[in-house]
Length: 287
Image 1 (cartoon, rainbow, N blue to C red):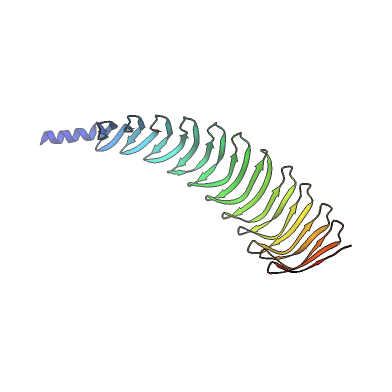
Image 2 (image 1 turned 120 degrees about the vertical axis):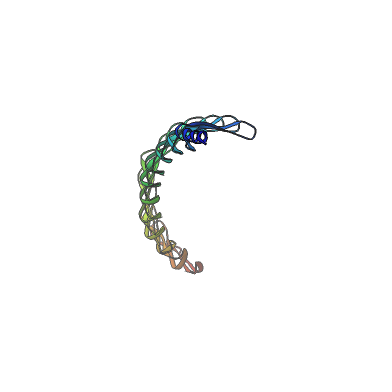
């Protein structure tokens, strides 16, 4: 009885080496047990014999830096644990060993600055997480490092300004979001900075009067949108000389009532009458 007690007492004070095996007798894991819990450095293997992961345990929980590998032996990711919970900077890798992302964790959740990379090493995007969700402004880039987009988040949902870029610095589309839906002013630009389109969104749909411009910055069309986001109200098309080319009304994307068409000198050349989007009367003018 004394010898059994002594053996138990020794096993609780000193680490005991342990190994496990796959059914084909290939080594699966090796490490130490202390008081029946994993302790100290442990290594785990694939059934092909390649190292799968290694790191340390404390009181049965992963502790400190751990490394994880692909079956090919290439490092897949590395990072730290504290009392079994992911914490600090974790680095993830592509199959060729190049860094794919560098992320910050706190209490097991993504927190703080995070970077993502293309296989060529160029940053693809970076921004901040808070409690596992995107927050503040995120920036996106193409494989040559040129900025393509920036957008703002709140609790993982688009909220605030979003800008699409061309040529690294020229904003070609500026929009605003609230609770993940387009809300407020919207601007579309040509690459030279001139207006292409401007209007407003409400709850994700176009609302009110929208303005459309040609490449020279001249107003080419003015149209209204209803609460359903469809063409609604007065619609007017302009020529390059600023004169009206056509005007009429829409209701839920369908032409209604009287539509007038003008030549480039401002003379009426045609009048059409619509009902439920279908023309039922037409009058032509000859001068």
